Amino acid sequence: MNLSDTIVAISSPGGYGVRGILRLSGPNAWELAQSVLVPHATKMLPRRWIDVQLEPWGVRSGLLLFKGPQSFTGQDIAELHVPGQPVLLAHLQSRLEAAGARWAEAGEFSFRAWHFGKLDVSEAEGINATIHAGNQRQLAAAAALRNGELFKWATGMSDSIADLLAWVEAGIDFSDEPDVGIIQADEIKGDIQALQGKLAELLSHTDRWERLDRLPAAVLMGEPNVGKSSLFNALLGRDRAIVSNVAGTTRDTISGMCETAAGTVQIVDTPGLEHSDEALGIHMNQARETAAGEADVLILVSDTAAADHLPQLPAPVIRVRSKCDLQPTADHVGWHSASARTGVGIDALRENVGRMAYQRPAGAEQRMALNQRHVALLGNAHTALTNAENVAAQWQNAPEILAVELRSALDIIGQITGRVSRDDILGRIFSHFCIGK
Ligand code: GDP
Image 1 (tube, rainbow, N blue to C red):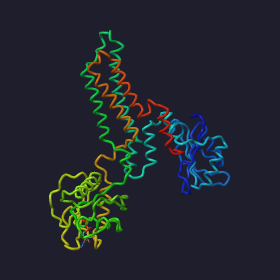
Image 2: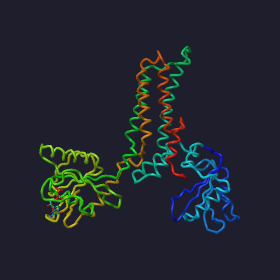
Image 3: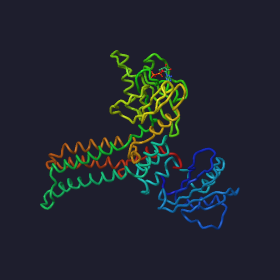
Image 4: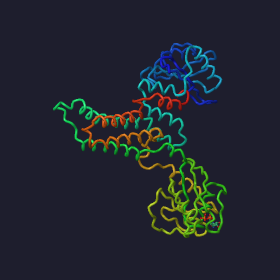
């Protein structure tokens, strides 16, 4: 990939919009941007909004200039902010190309940023994750990646492995020198275990990108006939589940989407608790437990509002006293009264479900999402460290073997940030980017 020419791309979404952006990066970015403008006397100051007019129609636009290396790519950048008009953008693009700019390949701006040391690979992946985020949870998790959280972690990890490796290599290179105190086997083993602990801690404090891809789920649970299916239909605003006064009508889980102010929530109706040992009863109980295990919110429905003791449950709980049209009673603390028949309390319940489903656990906003590549690399690093741990006890007999395992762990961690890069990995990462990013 040529990095010394000037590239151009439309960096705003396609179609008509309030604003369209053309971005240029490279040594001639500023001059090329000015070649499509009506010449005027204002100074070309970086990081300032400059009012300009496009040639030949005099369309009022804005120009933003960034001087490398203090720019996103590390090169000179020019951004033309023009009306989001596809014909105008296409015209400007072809004029800029005719003037010498090259149409950028997918991800080329971020690739340049990485190449010029402005971005590591995991931060670039954070940008890509932000672009493709489908919901608020993904957006928050992508932000942590983009802000370099994984980069900081991987850098610290690399430093610790490199320190250990330095001791081992010193043992190989200077084994005859009395001054070089060789590190003991149990010390090495302890250090390797501490590194494995760091790996485990990272994995337990991060989300998986794929897991965040689904909508949050709220699962209705309760005894048969308490009105779960009726609430399900009322929350969805249509008759999706069959409602019947025959207990056990819902035999498997059913789900549907419910719009709330916080976002779309998947509502899951489950079969009522079956007190039978027959095969169907067991299946119904299993279906309910599976749904409950994946729930972000549990909606526990009861038509009596007995203030019973709640067992330990896998997700936050909303308690609903159903059929409140039959027995209007004062609200119990922490209970929602609702009637699927009259609609009383349904809107408030729906909004509460939305709020809780989109509420992330304490500290979760700092969590980043690891993608498949990160998880695979961390798994490989763990294997390399386990191999190192296995040879640690005998390391003074064959220090080279321990060094190989530690170097392998170091290389793998380096691939997370792109410090130790392999062209195929980089090519794959950047090719997932959009043009202009
Ligand atoms: P599920 O077995 O828990 O899913 O309960 P259903 O939704 O199938 O309802 C059981 C019975 O209670 C049906 O006869 C419904 O018509 C009735 N029911 C459900 N919700 C209400 C309600 O809000 N008010 C009244 N009066 N009856 C209801």
